[in-house]
Length: 153
Image (cartoon, rainbow, N blue to C red; front, side, top):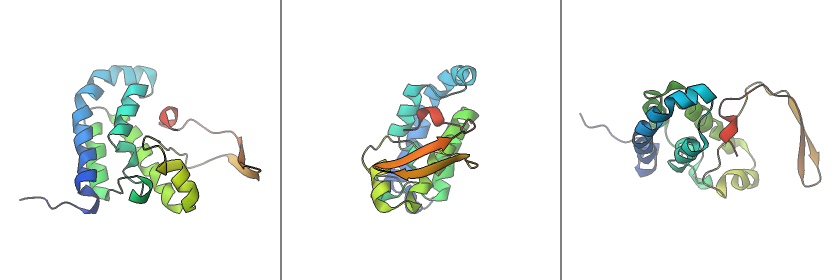
């Protein structure tokens, strides 16, 4: 039975699934390093970003893929089949992009709309405080480690 593409599984969403599949041999070759260093190698994280894997949940108006849930899960699954921790990092980076839809449009465009390789991450129990200061915010506090934080930015 032929599968009908979902909203985000047009050429953009499907391209992320294709990118995940294409990266599989590279991820497999780096699996021991990923485990040893407890982080994605920077060049692999960049390749994942270039493939749109971290922008699956970012709205199209901010240069994201705005993929449907099934497409997002399929892309994450393709990475996870090869290396579960790499799949976890893709899942965190992809779903953290959801926050872009709740930001003021100007700020979301500044964060996500300029550099298509921007990767966001998050912590569900932040322990910091942001205070408005001239020119932006001053953020203070202490955070626990967040998966994928080393390739965010």
